[in-house]
Length: 366
Image (cartoon, rainbow, N blue to C red; front, side):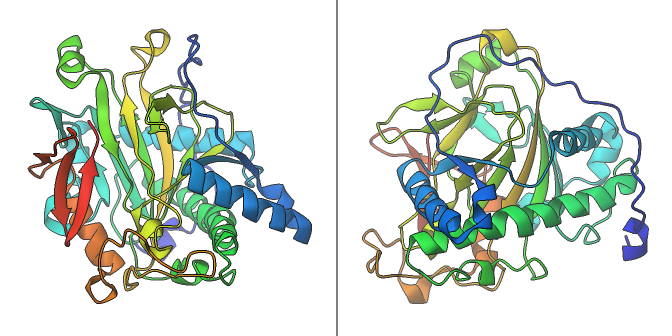
């Protein structure tokens, strides 16, 4: 795929994806902060946001972001585009563009259903299509090719207009220079930061029983920041500080932001990778597919994941590794990508499943 192949900016007509109606049930939702990026327009607003983001990411590890620069219509268009990867591509063609996660440690391409082991011999019912922010890096299915200009702009928008402002606020919240984290998340740098389209399909009652209704077991993301475009199917839950699993509420045209392990390492534990999972939706939404639109951000591949300690966080109290043993982002992401859902896990005394990757203990919450 060449640059010329994605040069056209004319929008292409695609079928409209109709999501499920919002859940009828009164669910136990997490009380998350709502970060209004329009406040960045003034110095006082930026200072206020730095405190809000710091507190949100330290207390919950998740928050909502509004006024992020995309209209409701633009967001709806991206969900239409996302669904093309699944409804507009045959199973045969999906296999042609299947990613080789185990061999390469990269998610680029399709992650097909039944790849990840969930529990008790049950495998997942979710498809991913992952596109590097450099959309020319890999070939794409026929139906996706005319949409690459919009996908490229979507990635660029998320990187420069959402990720970078959030990284600046996170640095200010630690008392670090504003560009500390931005400088190691270059838009044009070598790395694996990517957009992901993700579609969950309903499962059988037998599969639900064997997995206790868990679709994706509790885990932390391995990157720095994950950006999720809010959608109406209730299935995402976070492990709250009080030890209870709580649902993430849908807010139309909001983003759901969470921290991953790379940010935990880079901040010396000041910010934590947040434990979350996906479960069967409530009864009013069962039978619907759940379409997700994400931007998974990671530091540049050559960055060593050593802490950027600061006056407000001078010591990494529960250090995961010595500085000299810190992996690069490339080694970290490849190890996590190739192992996820494929490795043998050991259960600890508290029932949590564990594995060691690059000398770091990784936990899965089932």
